[in-house]
Image (cartoon, rainbow, N blue to C red; front, side, top):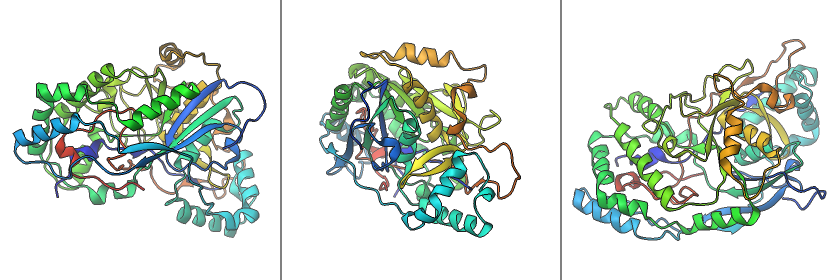
Length: 456
């Protein structure tokens, strides 16, 4: 089966390598400074960081895919099939109340090690100060074997926002994200002929009109109502699409023939921009992780969403010396860089883990914004402008904006059993087609809907 281009624009979780080292009710009467929506997977509502701060929790629930599994080879037939699809309101997905309970897979070592482990992180000390070498190895092996397959990304991203932040209130929406482990093994060579046919479809005036008027899906309407209900001002998205450069590198690594995706990406940006203008929604500021593929992203031809990003802040990562992290995407599309190495995040079971990746730079920026009083009705433009005014010539936000306790970086003490990452950050993860972009943009052409992977 040939790969669909839809998978290339699917959802990835920017969940990066964790550094292996070392729903509650009201709490108080102070009004919330900001209400933040976090869309992610793997929320553990029992985290102490969430106590008294979760206004509502929902989960994506999808019945079936409306998209056909195969596209006609004849261009005219493919056009008609796509037109018919774009005229149909998608009611396959909805938001159900609540989020499933997440098991603590490290519960058996919690009593013996958690207090010491968390204390190591919180006091900025080396693991050797609290653990023997045997204990340290036992812990890191457990983290490696347990966390690699655990859904904790949402707990980590939302936990970064909520930790030691009493004024924030959260609306959590759990949606399935795919696993980055399957990207390379499931990738099938792209073919220029298929890309060219999709370009023909997207350039067709009837397709453009139908795309622009594609009705907002039911789940998108429910997301809109949820944001209005709770007066959401800021959205955190630590997932996104794989950029063109990363796709080209993946194509080359599989010994595939080179392809040209520039026109395709530019058309997608053009159509998405037209769709957004015809479907205006609540004014919120979306803070989005820019990704970990070390790609150059300068505009829509490199990543389509760059062309429709007026209400979006794209966040990259810098390391402890304020150099751009080796994994972060860079380029004109990146609005700001924030700390992204060793970000302290709570995960299932209330363990504190230093994590790295743009996934965790984005919620650090959201945390800063959420600690400021945000008016309602909310206007995103001045908030974004004020944030951008604080960056330096290299688009870095000053490290002074972020408390030292938010990252793990012991500056003193013997370098014994120093902490190091167990792997490089994931390039991303594919997502099942049916849980589409929550803002409701339509699925892309038929070739792109031919093939997809199951999410986790």
